Length: 222
Image (cartoon, rainbow, N blue to C red; front, top):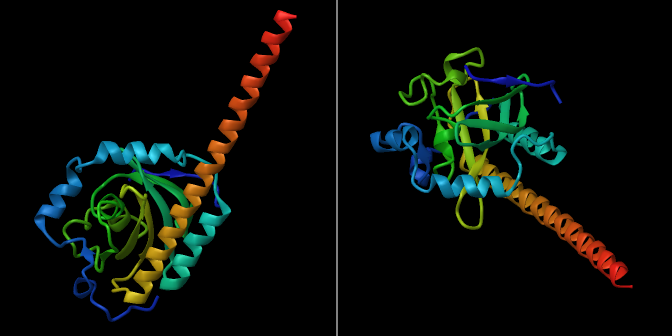
C-alpha cells in the first residue's frame, strides 16, 4: 500500500444510484479499461490541476471542515477532499484516515471517480471486481463502500473529489449525493478564490518590480 503519513491535524439509504443515472464502480468492462489506461484529456486535466497550485500545500481549515461535514452527512467514519495527480491521489483534507496523506492511483475509487461527471458510487467494494484489490479495501482500513462527487473546473476538467468511505456496504440516498455534489462545488469555489488571490499578489509584485526599474532608470538619467 503506497501511503505517506503526517501528524493528525452509519445509516444506509434506499435509493438505487443506477435509477438516478449515477455511475457505479462495476458498471461496464469498458469503464474498467478506461480507469486502468490513460484517460482521454488527461494531459489537459493535469495542466488544469497544476494551475490551481494546490498539490502538497499545507492543511486548509475550510477544506478540513468540508471533509468532516461530508462524513457527518453520510454518518460515515471517513471522508476526504482529494486531488488526483498523474501517479497518485493526494488528500488535501482527510477525516478518519489516521494520518494517511496520499495513495497510489489504483483504479476503482478516486482514480475512477475523477473520470465521472456525476456522483460515483461503490456499494460493496469487497464484492466489486474493480475495487476488491484496492489497498484501501483489502488493507487495514477495510473500506466497503465509497461515494464521491467530482471537483470540476468551469472548463469541465476533473481535479479530484469530495468523497466518503465506510467500513460496511451501503447505498447512499439521493439527498446525500446531492449534498456531496454541493460540497464539491464549494471546494471548487475555494480553489478559484485562492487562485484569484495568488494572481493579485503576483500582479502586485510585478507592479512593484516595474516601479523599482523605472526609479533606477530615472536615477541614471539625472
